[in-house]
Image (cartoon, rainbow, N blue to C red; front, side):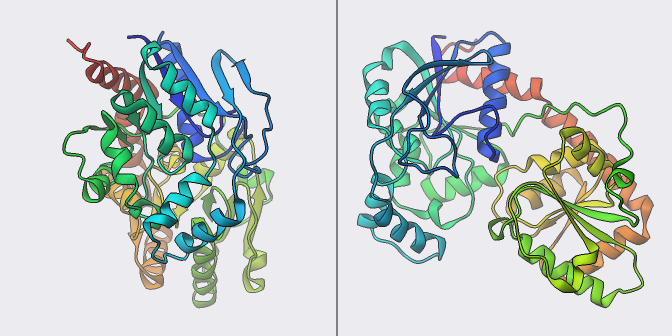
Length: 398
């Protein structure tokens, strides 16, 4: 194989985000296996930055052994974009012209698109991740059948834009992180002539030698349930807080707290402030200790294409509770038999009571989860699956 390019809207060792983390870890694992990998990206720092601002200078970089080419972004009309994006966030219908505006005024680099077009022969594949950004939409139009998409697709309003049908079907292949993600893509875009593979996210889990001491360090006196991730309404953390408030009000005799770790901020209802511990960012070691000592991990989000925190929790033998409205995480819970899922408050309460009163069930679910993770998502296993799929796409597989 020739060189393989990963095309992403932004890249850096410390930038947050599920798709960003998966891309970064996969790229490093492939380089470690000896593949010639290069990152093509913009000069924007990260998702939460101003998409009109070139934080980096355009040019060639090498960050911890990863070759990177950065390209300047074009000036975008933020007001126009925000109008269309606002409609999508509210799940309002948009026109094809609205879709055109959305992608034209999305984070975009003409220089990056030109580079792809002029250097097609120097690369075997261009891997685009994730699906909804301008780097993917416009880049695939240039790379054509040399494109491989890793969409990180959610069942959300953005996924239903008709313009996406073209770029999904221009790609020679698609890699999905879960079976339900693949099924959603086939339902929306057909993909009859696109090679498809469900691989999942690879995990680099280095469990600390000492996995106790979390409660002591953070002065937690009671058993607790854990939320790990970004704290905002997009992740349904407001629903978790609402349900936890109801639970505490209905079960005053049960000693249970809620611990939140991760970035972002959200208002905690005054009625439960003394039972909720918002620790912000913690070290990786403390995160694993937090999983280990938790009764369960709660993942309330309905928009997940994988969920690293679920896998990390299972690696520490801690079961999960997930939202029935997220097909991906619900299917993981079913396939692994490592957790349960709720559709409303009553089910949430019953599951939590079941866990609190039945440590044997908690142990069984946690053990099932651990077995599932290390069988399916070990980094070496996932990396080799990617390499095999690359070889298949370029016609070099034996």
